[in-house]
Amino acid sequence: MTEPFEQIVAEHGPTVLRVARAVLGPDDADDAWTETFIAAMRAYPDLPEGSNVEAWLVTIAKRKAIDQHRTRTRNPVPVEVLPVADSAELSATDPDPAERDDELWGALAGLPRKQREAIAYHYVVGMPYAEIATLLGNTESAARRAAADGMKTLRATYARERRDLEQGASS
Image (cartoon, rainbow, N blue to C red; front, top):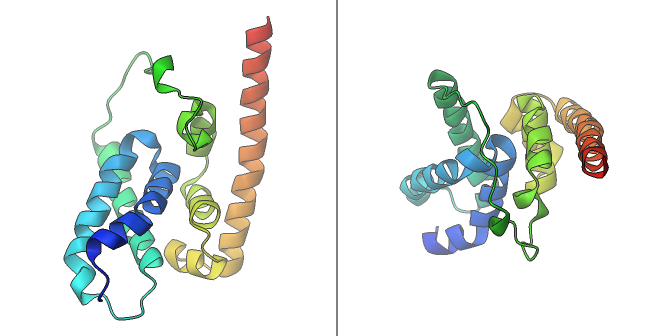
């Protein structure tokens, strides 16, 4: 590979972070992003010329996300009250609405893992279903079905949560 690794990070870092956030949620995404690029930096010299770097990084991020899920299940941390983001952190100029929409994150986190990953890989990264099938270990049609089912559930749950929130605010 002739492209400097710093350029790889600059070019694909935001995409990998969006995937990690979609798969893990905003709290664990930063750790997965960091671990992804540390692993990628070590393996980058051996990456064959002409490889799809974005797909390679997403594959590494997926493995790091699985590691995060395993770690989370081994070390649960119960809390009585969920932390609420400070309203000062919620900037109207934030270019990514998903970064400030807790209901969207909640609805996404409620999806089964394969549906959540299929949505992240297809709608965040823009990967074709054939590549998603490889990452998920299933067929192209199964990957397409997982994304469609996930989007259907996401639309229903997210819309319901938004409606409940609006009704709660008006009463």
